[in-house]
Length: 412
Image (cartoon, rainbow, N blue to C red; front, top):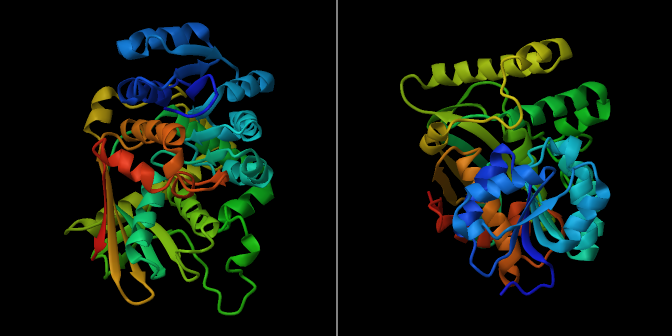
C-alpha cells in the first residue's frame, strides 16, 4: 500500500525525452501493480505514443500535459502526485517552477541535475519551504551523484562512528555515451558563469552546497588547506594509479559535502573528499595525460560564445543520445577509499552494467522515485532540499542491488 491520498504515486515529467523514455521503460517493468504512474510533458500526442510503446502493464497509465513554463499547470501536477521524477533540463532554464511547486505542495521530488548553480538556488529558496511541507527534494538521482553519495555513505556506515578523513572516489572503468541534454546543461552553466561573476565564485567554492557555509573551512582561517578538484596528472602511491581529472567531480564532490553537513558532519570535521579518473598499467601516464589535455581543450572551447557556437555544430541536439548498442554495452566502476581517524583503511565499490549516464541512470532515477513513493517508513526522517544519501539513503542501495548494481564496502 502506498499510504497517501494523492491521485498518482509517481509522475514522470519529461517522459518523452531521451532519458525520460528510458526511465519510463524501466518503471514499466519495475513498478508493483498497486503503484499508479502518470507520464507528463508538454505534448499529449507524444506521451500517448510513448505509452503505447511500453509493455502492456503501462497501457493504463495516465497522461498529464504540463509545460515547463506554465507554473499553474505544474502546481496542479504537483498536487496530484506523491512523487515527481523529472528529466527536463537544463534545470537552470526549466527546473525552478516544478521544484518550487513540489516543495510547496509537500510532494517528493527527484531529478537528474548535475548543475551546482541550480541546486544552490533551490536550496537557498526552498529548503525551509520543503521542510515545512514535508517534501523531500532530492537532487542528483543519476550517475550524478548516486554512486558518489552512496559510496561514501557505505563507508560511513562501515566505519561505525570512526570519522572519515582523506577520501577518494576513483573511476576505474567508464564506458558509455553522451546526449544532447548533457551538453545543453554544460552550455547553460558556462553561459551563466560568463555573464555573472557571482556564479563563477559559487562554482569555485568546494562547499558551494553546504547548508551552513559559515561553519565550513574558510580561506581566511589560519592553517586552512583548500579542497580543490584535480586539474592535472598525478601519481598516487596508495591507489597505485595515475590520476586525471574527472569531469563530474565539480558537481559530485559538492553534493557529498552537502550530505556531510546535512548529517551534522557525522562523516567527520576532518573529512576531505576528491574524485578522479584512475589509470593503471604501463600506458597509464599517457592515458591520464591524454584525458587531461582533451578535457582542458574541450572546456576551453566551451567557455566562450564564438568557440561554443562552433563546437555546437558537432554536438548532439537535446533529445538525442547514444545508440541502444552503446547503452547496452556501457558500464562503470568506481572505488571509494578512505582512511578513518583511527587509521583504518576502507574501500567501497559501486558498479553497474549499462551506459552510466542513460541505461544505469534510468534505473537510478526510477528506483529513487519508487523509494520515495513506497519506502517512507525506511527513509531518513528528514525533509527539505536533500541529497540521495540524506533523502533516501541505504534503502536506495538495497533497491539498486536488486537491479544488478554492485554496492559493497569492506576494510581494505
